[in-house]
Image (cartoon, rainbow, N blue to C red):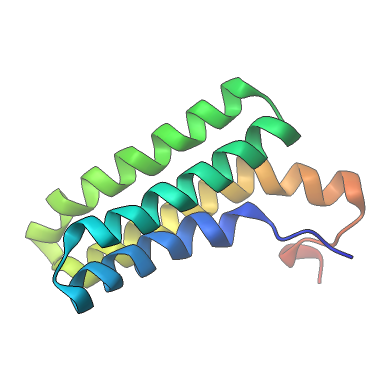
Length: 112
C-alpha cells in the first residue's frame, strides 16, 4: 500500500484552513486545521527524514501562512491562499516527498 505523500496535506490544509475560517467566521477553527496539518506533516518529516528538515518545512509552512495575509492585500484573499498553497506543495514535494518516492519506487507525477 502506498503512503500518502505529505505535499498534498501541507498544501491543501492551507486552503481548507482558510475555507473553514471563512465558512464558520471563527479564525481559530481554521487555525486548528493548520496546526493539526503542520503537526502531522512535521512528525512525518522528522520520522522519515530528520528533525532539521522537519523544522525547515514547518517554518516554510508558517511563513507562507503569514505571507498569505500580506499577499492577500495585493491580489485578494483566495488567490493569495492558492498561491502560497502551491508554493508550500512544491517546496514540500521537492524537499521531502520526491526522494521518498524515488527510494520506495512509487512513481512521481513527472514519471507517469
